[in-house]
Image (tube, rainbow, N blue to C red; front, side, top):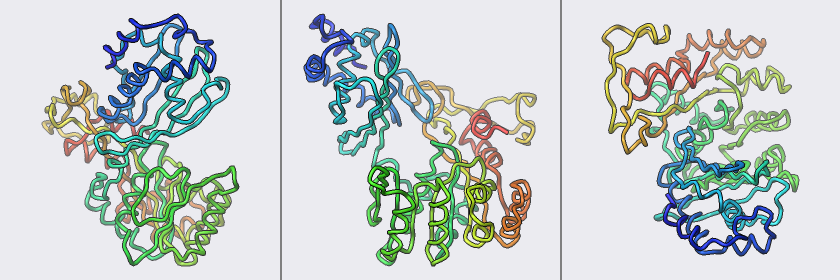
Length: 417
């Protein structure tokens, strides 16, 4: 990628084009050269075509690294080594596109770029950080056409799907989706909102930031600089007569209390938390300082999730398994087939293409509400959930391994115990 463009740039290079201490006027002139514009466009276009979620541009002493995050894993972009000589021009071009200060190279900056590729609207979040050998940039690519999944496309099994659907149809209560950053929590919430949107109900969200625009949903961006916090936004939207409220994340006691107040007054509240499993969600609210009786009376469910890479359909093969190398809790039986991707052009030789979710849905029934009220630890809540059909993340992963959707290593990596 960009080989011909780099050759053109090398052929027409001037001494000033590679000087890292160039003035802002020099940087502006370099960034507006046709060859630089073309190169930056090629970098972004290849990332979009490769289904990348992020572009990492990292400066080193004798190298400029460009990597794409595809299906959660970083891959080096195929760029010529001479690209290092045009580091300042590339970074300046991206800063201009994001409306950032090209003369400021000492402090972090954040910006945004919007563009269209083949009729698809791509929103790019730009983060610039000063590093030892120059400024590093990470571009988060948000494809507005590819993130809006329906609930049936998320990868839930039939039982989990039916239980989750029943929860989002409740008239009031709090439903939490939990997991680490990058586990697809927001995508799940958007899919739930898409399933709920109709002319008969009003849906309001408070998000930081608003990542995707949902038709029929009133979305409010958080802006702490002007005092627009999650808690303040949530209290304000209650006066707008909503039926369903989505909060991007419950981060503190004030937001948690506002969410609970909304649930107690007859609203369905959807939000996210950072916990490792579903049973830890009520405990996190208690640790924030929410009274146990409020959690037990308003929380209707918590779903933990992870994303695993799916085996490439074009090069999927059956493999012979070594029983000694398999986890015991897989419960593998001799002769049972396992699958992997051999690697092909479609999957860049990785054997994987795309991702799917692993889900652990804890529905709060009477025994669970009683356990939350008495601050029972997560293991006891899990036991109560088991009696109601709770399947753990790892178990959902093993089911998808047996279906030939993903591999044992992917499940182990995402659900390490």
